[in-house]
Image 1 (cartoon, rainbow, N blue to C red):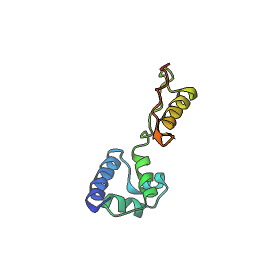
Image 2 (image 1 turned 120 degrees about the vertical axis):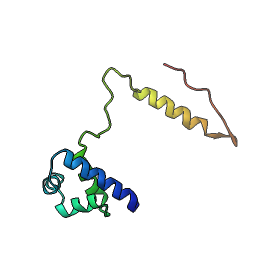
Image 3 (image 1 turned 45 degrees about the vertical axis):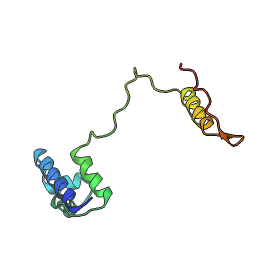
Length: 107
């Protein structure tokens, strides 16, 4: 991340913190980092990735990847194994030639 990107991120962090009505010390305490590190983020100075992640976790706690709903069909182990087997066989040389087998039947 270059200086311009850090400065822009710092401005967004400060805006999100003030919108949440948090002081720098309180936000830093919640993130488990020092207030000086928090200030460095807002001022656009470099910090370790884990410290930056802690800042973002405080301001955006619901940014975890969504979990698929129970009614959405996901691939079964058999489906995944069939696809993997197909892909491995597709690029396996037989007699010096690459053999492209037929795709496994759809379920």
